[in-house]
Image (cartoon, rainbow, N blue to C red; front, side):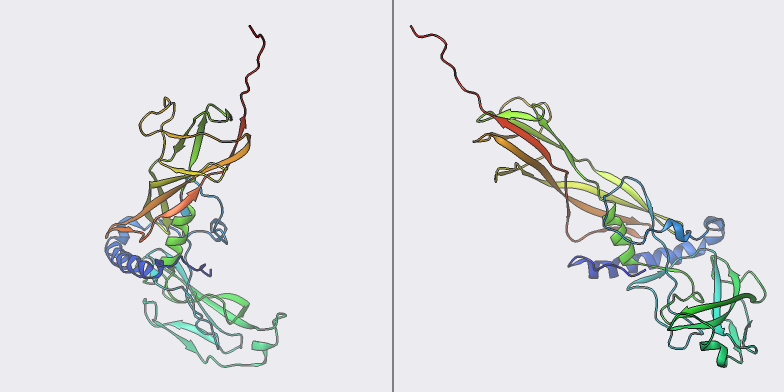
Length: 320
């Protein structure tokens, strides 16, 4: 999964997250047999293909990538910047050209403890796949534990498949990237709402009260079995009143006119005005190795509400 470009200033932050999470992974590896023995890799169907939609209030899986291809001539690299191995059970797959004498044999339980037998090319390698740029491979696999040690004595044949040079690697432990963590944390940021008093109608030169509803929120990012809390804390609140004027402050719901802390605005003309509020949230990602704060707040803007502003006119009904 290709990661989208991060905001300016988050690249170095991603490296720091990577360093801390790497330490977390090492610590978790010591107790993997107790804590992670029942954890299974996230299913592909649970992993959205893209981000940037509306924020939600629930957790989201951060799915693993599995590096660059082995046994594939010209195979592409895998994993994004700051790749972190995650200790979960997984299936190691090694691909060799689809030729009769090619196979894979285990030489030990470690990730790199195997050898390819013959590993030669033949006509079938590049003649049996209908898609240009794909080649025919024989697949050999074995089950690996969360400690990256094989739970089977040898590889077994898993059939034949066509693969391109940019297919992910499945012979190395599954990884996630720090960019994935940050992207998905940002996608979970809450959206503020607000109230207008009185309701959705006001009058020229009459103070209208506005109050934002923005509370501190904690959501959980599930990284292949690791639960990482992400805290969003509201900070600066900025209002757009729809008439070219703006204000600041969270406001006070039900405030009296002129009450301290209230956000009020009086419109100078009648009309329909789209009002919205933006909240700058600070973000903290907490790992067992310690909390990490994003270097800058992120802004979230509410859906607009339309306020109708009318005029109050005096009518003379009697003259003495």
